[in-house]
Length: 264
Image (cartoon, rainbow, N blue to C red; front, side, top):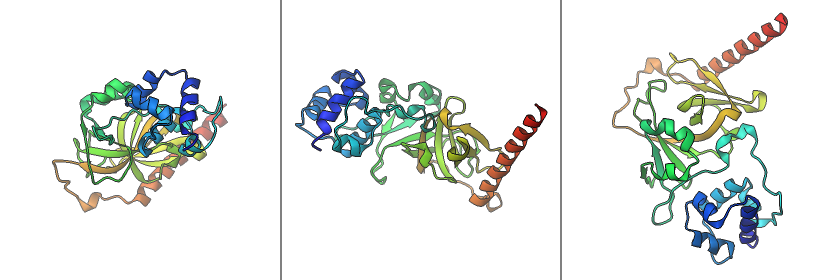
């Protein structure tokens, strides 16, 4: 990590941040940041990932390259608006907490997700069974993802680049238009710049979301509930069936566009 301390200092100054401001973004003490920039200490991997996210560079470049003025870049719109700073709190041992976003805080989260003070006020817990990573928990509402019941807490792992979303998997997606939603996501960013969000409960219609509307995405890894799901096999839906629904929706959208162009 011969370049790390120099790169941290250069890029912090490039973003016109004081040590106090940068330390606040990372949720660490200014004295610890000073030790990193002076080369007297080295941050752990989780903190390195957080630092790289602020500067919008890869961890490999941060620790191994001489990053000159202008080395940072602006995140692309398709990656989402929440990529500049991911606020995460830590316990006394330096281990990342899992912050919980209850229903009553969901509306505030849309504006406070990148606010250190807001995130600090969220309830926090640890779950040792999860592998190393950055996690957040969200209380879900409604019955669109049965047999996952309303009030269930879904724990998601942070997705740094939404272009890496795996179609058919479940995610917590945060956007200003739809708020905090838990859905099965189909990734069509390369083809159309859109994500298709599908409910496991087929009474709910799928819908599309532009990639540049997405603020954060968390890949569902576990859930906590005080209610056991009552699984009705007749309501089980396969991933293939859901994918077919999405394709039908795409065809309808294409047909509507074609008809509009003919009418011009």
